[in-house]
Structure formats: structure tokens, C-alpha cells
Length: 625
Image (cartoon, rainbow, N blue to C red; front, side):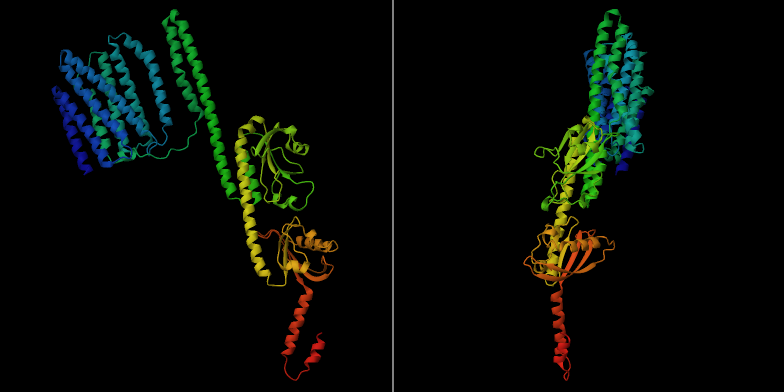
């Protein structure tokens, strides 16, 4: 069906084209039929192929219809006389003006983010350059020539509109053809726009000379316009040309800002040239107007350049924060969080900015119980400094603060170097008992830190969430592990206790309270559980187990004193499992030797009772006592 329609359309258009040049007396009828057929082809293509965006093709169809109306009115005005002829000529001019308006709107609608053209910024820059070049040519070349031609002012304005409109349509179509040069629809539209521009130029030149002669070869351009645009609408690719797609992120280059600056300065330069050419009377006023316009343009462009630079920096910070959030989301250890912070801070600051980064670990001067900091958890946070004082951050208002480096504590200022300002951003600790003063310190110039403060503060908040997530995950895993160990170890006589690197008890099975005579509290110090006389032997055992790299067990036998004054004889085994995820400590396994001997004696007695008849079981019992 589409191929038969296309063949029929070409056949009818060919017959009408022959009639235009063979019988010029009926040109009004022929041009009207050609235009109607072209508009009908566009309408059929819209109905058949159903493009996602119809209004560009409706505007193109309207432009073709307006051009056909203008051609019919023009041909009739030539043969009419008096007021009728003048009225028809006026209607033709109005139709021609509407033609270029509709065609320009239609082709510009096709340049929105579609499959064929994803970025129309370059095309718009090209149009601006073309229009500025046309303005310069008109002011310096064409306008002086038209001044000597006896034409009314409306007709001169009409020539200008025709020229600008034709150039606009052709430039847009050439831009589309350069991007989608294999698309038959784009090629047909480009051929039609070029033909119309060539015929308009020939008509304008003829009007300035001997006059326009109807039926000449110059009319082939208008005929090519009608024919090609109908073919473009009948092709199935007309729907693809108007398919919208998501726009791509763009970065405004400095060359484009320079191009905009040059184009904006064109009008002041032309004003200055006209002032010099106009004579001494117009020189002063023209130069003042040109200077004011030029300065205003430069100030406006400078403001736009600043806004573009700020937008570019904001986009860069947003992308860096997104990448940092991805890295922090996938982090499973505090070392990975520290690496993500170092990498992200370097990207959030402007390029080539000299800066220093330091992690301040808050550890109170008196460490006991809940105030102790897990030093191993922060070992990978380098460079770092351990402090015993709170940092100057008002956590009630926000998580960061820019302060002069010289006003910081001397132990911090000496590590940060000569930078004038320091950004202090608080971080959460990996363990719930760590101090809240742990922070990230970044030094650079004051203006750089102020511009990046919000981004670094968001980065610190994301790092805090990552640390809390890991702490919550570890705490949940510890609860599951303790529940499992309680179920397993609670039914045996052995007691299991896990001691962390900081000396805190991370786990104690229920039999620990029965063996030691005191119930060990989670996160309590193991020194608080044992008698002072028994602490050295446990310290030696923990140190010996920590020196073994293979994780093998170290054994010993102890006679521990309980709080009630009684003693218990224990067999203790210790393994270093601080590198094992979910344990993170030294595992002590303790068993009561007295209970073990009683169990062994009971086992021997049962075996003797089941011995063969005829043996002296009593003497055997005395032998194994």
C-alpha cells in the first residue's frame, strides 16, 4: 500500500509539473493542485505512520499550504487589475510571510532531542552565526544597494524576511542532514528547503533587474519543494524523525561562550560603523550608543560565564558525591570507608587545589569502660592524630565548620601545615562506645573550603551512615553468634569467652559465671573479672596466643581464686581469631579439671561394674582410686 501511494503521488506530481511549464496560462490552478497534493501527502503520512510528536509535521503541512495559497494569489494578482489585483498581491505577501514562520517553527520542532538529533545546542549556535553574518552582509552590502532601488519599504522588508526565513530553514535542514545523512526523510526535506531558497534568491535578483518572468527554470526550486516534502512525509522514517529521547547531559564549552560574545557584540560594532559613515552629526550619539551596548553585552556575558562556571562546579560536585555514595554503599570495612573519603575529598575540591587531609581520633585522657576507643578499628584511617579534647564543631546546627587553622589546638595545627583555613566535619565512630569528637579535617584556602563545605558535609554524613550500617550489621551478627554459642556451649561444661584487642569482653557463655564465680558483663574489662593475683597469667596467655600467626591454640592450667575465696582448677586454651569476621577477638575455652576428673572416675566405675563375672571388682576399684 505505501509503495503504491508513493508511486501514484510521484506520477500525479510529475504530470502537474509538466503542466506548469507547458501551459503557464493556468499556473494558478497548477500550483494550487501541486500544493494541495503535497499537503495531502503530509496528512496521509501522519495518519499512516503515526509519529509520536505530530505538531512538527502539522506545522510543515501548514507552511506548504500557505506557500500554495501565496502562489495562487500571486498568479491571480498578475492577471487581475485595479483593487482586486492589489488585494490579491497583499494576500500573497501575507501568505508568504506565514509560510516562513510555519516552516521555521516546524523544522525547529524537529531539532528537539530526538533519535536523529540528540543535541541541538550546536545547531542553535550555527543559526546564531548565520543570522549575524546575514545581518552584517545586509547592513554593509545589501542595504546600500537597495537604497538605490525604487521599491516601497514594505517590499524591501518582505525581501529581508524571505531571505532570513529561507536561510534559517536551509541551515536547520543541513544540520539534520549532517547528523542523519542516511535518512531518506531528512534528505528529502533538505532538498526541498534548498530548492525553495534557490528559487527565492532567483526571484529577488530578477525583481531588482528586468523583472520576474513566470514559467522560467527558476520555478523548479519551488516545484522541488512541494515534491520532496510530500515524499518525506510518505516515507516510514518520518515517524522516527520525531521520536523523542532523553536528553544527554551537556557541558558548555568556553568556545561556545566566546561565540555568543562575538555574536552579541555584532550589533554595537555595526552601530559604531554606521555612526562613522553617517557623518559628524551622528558620530557622538552613535558612538555613545555603541559603547553602552558593547559594555552591557560584555557585562551580561561575564555574568553568564560565571553562572556557567558555577553550574559546571555544581554538576561536578553532584557527580562526585554520587560516585562517593556508591563507594560508601559497597564498603564493608572501615578501611574502605577511609579510602572512599580520601578519594572523594580530592574530587570535591576544585582541580589543582592544594589541600591536606587528616583524621582526628578522639580518645579521652581517662580510658575506662565505655570511654575506651577501639584503636584497631581506626588503624587504617591515615593520616591520623589521636586527641584528648573535643573538636570545635557545633553539632546542634550542622556537622561541619570552617575555622582558621591557627585557632585549632596546637597538636592539630602542627599536623595541618601552613594552610589558612580548616574544615572540620564530624564522623560517627565504628563502635557505639567511641567518642563523638572523631572528625575529618581538610585544609585549603578559605574560599575553596566555603564553596565545598556543603558537599564535604554531605560526604561526612554518608560516611557516618556507612559506619553506623557496618556497626549495626556487626552488632546483629554478634547477637546471632552469641545466641548460637549460648545454645551450643550452654549444654557443656566448657566455658567460652571472647576478649577483644582493647581488653573488653565481647562474649561470655553461661558456664563462665559458674566457673569464675562472677558473671562477666559484655564490654567489661577482663581485669575486672579476675583476681589481681591471677591477671598476669591470663595476660601472658593472651600475648602468647597473639604472637602465633597460624591461629593455633595455646594451652595452660590455672588455679584461679574466686570472689568468695575458693579456688578452681581450670584447663584453658586460647586462639587468636581477631582477623575472622564475626569473632574479632581472642577466644578462651575453659574447663573445670575437678569436674573432668570426676567424670573420668565415674566412667571407670561404670566400666568396672560391667566387667566379666569372676573378677574381684572391689580390688579393681581400690586400684583405680
